[in-house]
Image 1 (spheres, rainbow, N blue to C red):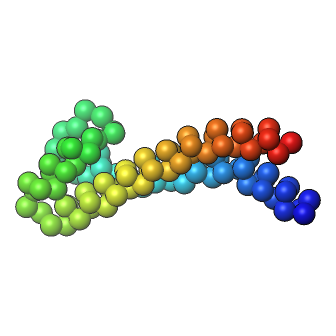
Image 2 (spheres, rainbow, N blue to C red):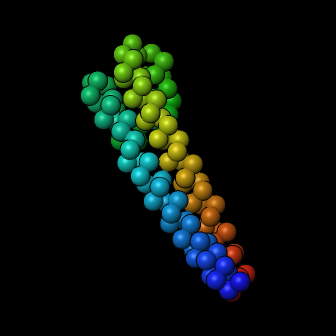
Length: 101
């Protein structure tokens, strides 16, 4: 039983870092600003908004470009989801650590 307790405690401590690493990897995969610049669409930030990407998906005639934008939008949403999971797991980690100790 003690081994299970220690493994659960390790999981609680490491889970926010795990979610953060996954979120960063999805952010690095999101290349929406590069896609816009390759099509000579000027963007003011490297963090292109979801609305701008959706607008270009619905209005651009190039099918390959829209597929790449859909993939970039998926990566943005996955990045946001894992950041939210990280923020949720930090208080759970603290509560679990102090209650289990």
